[in-house]
Image (tube, rainbow, N blue to C red):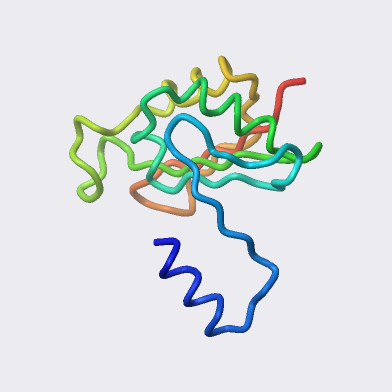
Length: 121
């Protein structure tokens, strides 16, 4: 994916993007660089979400946010139901990592929930 993105950036002449390869235990990002971290149908893949999100919290700028979009249990599409997470599980894990739910959007996507969090402190 990094090669693909690099090629697309080059094709468009964009030079203000720096690609970094993190892993499931460490995003490998410097502190205070992100305005928003978006997890689009990937949150359910995290093996240690609370620990990972604590590391993401360190990478956020003062007004930074986290957005999480995941498929609901009722969705006819998406990952197998056994891999889906209820909203309350995600909200609880973000709370453990030091975040507060700011917004919950239900009107944008018929099969996904969309949650936005801010650091609690």
